[in-house]
Length: 269
Image 1 (cartoon, helix red, strand yellow):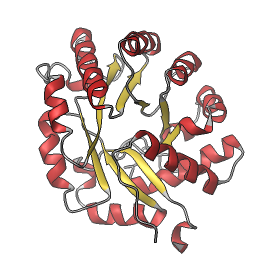
Image 2: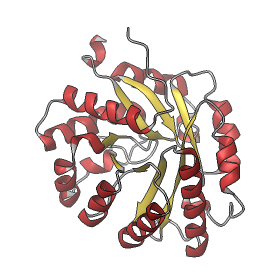
Image 3: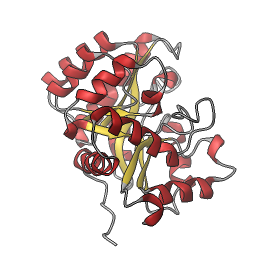
C-alpha cells in the first residue's frame, strides 16, 4: 500500500475495452492498482458490443460492467428493449445500466431516437434498481424535465456521469436522490462554475471517474487517459473542498458501493 499512501479508489466510469488501451492493457491496470484503484466499471456504449467487453476483461476480478447504448448510437440500436437490458444484467459482473443520455453537441443522432433510448434505459433501471449512468451534454433543462417525469412513475438510482451541467440540474439530481460524478474535466481551465458546484455538493453524493481513454486531467490534457490518472482529479477536488485526499477517497469509494450495490467490496488485506 505504500505506493498509494493507503488510498482506496474506484474508477466508476472508464472504457477499458476501447482500442486505445489495448496495446498496454495489463500495464494500464497495474498502474491503476498501484495508485489505489480497487474497482473499475467498464461502461457500455453499445449493446451490440457488450459480449466483447465482457470477454475482453473476463480474467480480472476487479473489473465490472454496465450495459447500454450511448446517445451517439441511439439510431443504430433503436431496437434495444428494456427486457433485453434487464436480461443482460443477470450476469454477476453487470452492475449498471448505460451510459445513456441526451447530447446535441457531440453527436448528431436524431433527437427522437435519443429520447426513446433514454426512456428504455430508465425503464430497465427502474426494474432492476441498478444505477442508470447518464451522459448529459448541454441539455440541462430537458434532462431535468425527463428525470422528474420518470421519477414520478417510480424511483430508480442514477449517476450523472462526468457532470458538466449547471446548478439547476445539480439541485434537481440531489432532490431526486441521485449521485454526481466528476472526471478530469473538472481540472481543466475555464471550469469555474463547475468548481463551485463540486466544492459545495453534499459529501455523500460525489463519485470519481476517469472516462478513460478520454478527458485526461491536468497535466495530461490532450493525451490518452487511463484509470491511474484518477488521483489527479481526486487531489483537485480535495483541494476545492478543503479536505484531505484520503478523506475524499474514502468518501467517494463508500458512495460508490452505496449506489452500485451489486458490486462486491474488496476483501480487507
